[in-house]
Image 1 (tube, rainbow, N blue to C red):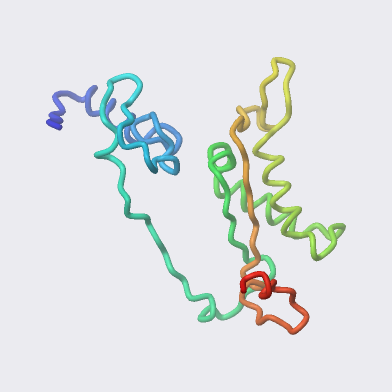
Image 2 (spheres, rainbow, N blue to C red):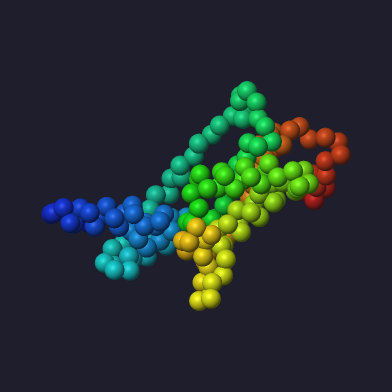
Length: 171
């Protein structure tokens, strides 16, 4: 593909199509959905998407055992684009912090409730026009929303003899 940018407008349009759309490559495909879409073309310009997709993931490895201390508030959040398209990292952190600080929630349900609160925040509230709206007034997610809030402290804890790890199911 021969791509020669001629003027500032074309530079802007190229930059916008690559980076401005919410987590979409060439304003077309959600990058997390790029697996297998080798023949997909952009909707407007019919540009092939494949040259812009990379099969190499960005991976960061952190040895949690080397950290000085982990509290029950240190979590890993794994979520689908239905959450990340409408909430930023700061909003997610505030919602999780509030949920984990809620003293009315049973200890064994805190992480489940934090995930539930995130899903509710991303979904928003229904409007009269059959759309969903965030409490801030913006559009809420109409996509599926999957959220896991995982305690890093408890993930590192050594198993006890009472833990039901379903070993018998693996044999």
